[in-house]
Amino acid sequence: MNLSPLQKARYQYSPKLPGMLRGGISEISVKVGAPTESVADQAKIKALFPNTYGKEEITFVKGSNTSAAKKQVVGVILSGGQAPGGHNVICGLYDAIKATDKNNVLLGFKGGPSGLIDDDFIEFTDEYINAYRNTGGFDIIGSGRTKLETEEQFKVVTEVAKKHGLTAIVIIGGDDSNTNAAVLAEYMAAHNTGVQVIGCPKTIDGDLKNEDIEASFGFDTATKTYSELIGNIERDANSAKKYWHFIKVMGRSASHVALECALETQPNICLIGEEVAAKKMSLAAIANYIADSVEKRGNNGENFGVAIIPEGIVEFVPEFSKLIAEINELLAGSKTEEFNALPDWDAKYAFIKKGLSAESFAVFEILPQFVQQQLFLERDPHGNVQVSLIESEKLFSEMVKNELAKRKAAGTYKGKFGAQHHFFGYEGRCAFPSNFDADYCYSLGYNAFMLIQYGYTGYLSKVSNISKPAEEWVAGGMPITKMMNMERRNGEDKPVIRKALVELDGAPFKFFAAHREEWAVKTSFTYPGAIQYFGPAEVCDLTTRTLALEKGQ
Ligand code: FBP
Image (cartoon, rainbow, N blue to C red; front, side, top):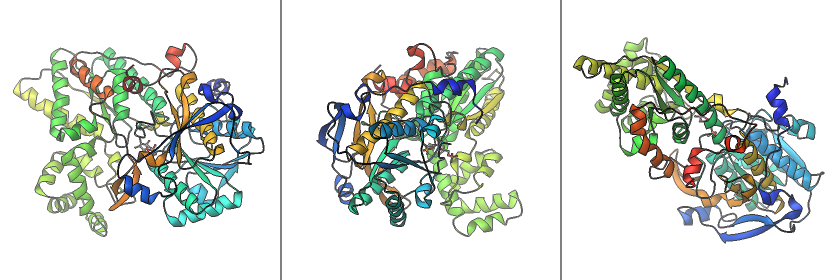
């Protein structure tokens, strides 16, 4: 690996642990809290998790170690999309394992959950780990999206665990992966395998959070990366004064990423999917809302602006999600082949017109042709439209352009409209973790081993009070079943961790809503600049505006 000067310098960074973990296992004891209940559907979740349900929240405190001495062989996997700081979770885990007993072993299973099934692994050494400290990416062992959820898979994992003498498995993943961690923990307990399972909360999307987990790791770095870029674009827009920039930001479903970027950069427009759904906004209503800002600014001589569009927006537009559901039906099973065999777009268009309800066809008809065609691109493994392939930033800019043309003809709009389009997603997922993510991730990994050493299973590594300096962070664990409820997934009722959407009565959204009217008309851009790794703590260790507002700061 060729090392950049920053990578070399970041190797020297010592991530900060919560105060109470700094003396290592010998100075830690456990404060056991009250038994827990799942957030909803208690009877059903209890019945599905008879061995792991209802366990107590635990907090680590300074004291003398009472854990039983035993050789630990731990396996770790990275699951799902990359998020900055994943390497540090593994480094923290490794350091805690080795500091407790140098004969302990950490195995990294490669390529995500499938590594555990295929028994594809490496044994970590100091040299190997040191090359990945404080770096972005998941390339230390790779990641993948295979789901560990079937009885068959659990049997194979049990065999692999037995072969290596695994005492514990750590799953670093999002809500789905940690749901599966809970199911695996229950299976391991029910079959007396002696294998503990611990989860760590990851995802740049920021939607794995609740009253116990204050933030998923990676959200801080990813949003800071996007906000830097958005701020730079705002400054360019304000300098050249000739373009409206439509910027789509990642976040498969929830709009936390878009909202955080808006709080950081104060753009003219930021759409929030959850609000669009609550107000049942149509595509035309959204386009009109953006056009209003363009018109007012244009009439003030400001023919430029920035609009942030969350990746998941179209699924929140009721008429659009109905259209997608109908298209999924239209192409179900062998009908896809029939559709693909049609000779040209005209023939396909006629097929679509015949197959859709009048209501959905009316929506389809107003879409620009490139979006209409994107709806019929490759399906996902379940045969559904891949909504993330829809260029919603171009869709809205096109609809705004058409609306402005009408307004110009009516004489109300006097400005000029030129648009540029951007998508910020992968750019942020593997950035060098911010100091916050480097510290938080290292702490989550270190703490995960404390939970293992104390014999816990089915827990999520929990580090809280994270809007305060690391010294004041609180380490412990929360049973994953506490975060679960029953939801309908692929036609079945399943126990799942409840996904956190943007709360419209939450402080971050309320702050945004209180300021957006002014931002829509008056240039109020803020330029956050690049992530700073060295310098004053008030710049380098700053957490997100979302977290600060949630904590009333
Ligand atoms: P996770 O939920 O696994 O953390 O991934 C989130 C995400 O980064 C989304 O923001 C994005 O829509 C998706 O992954 C992209 O996935 P892929 O890497 O498969 O293109």
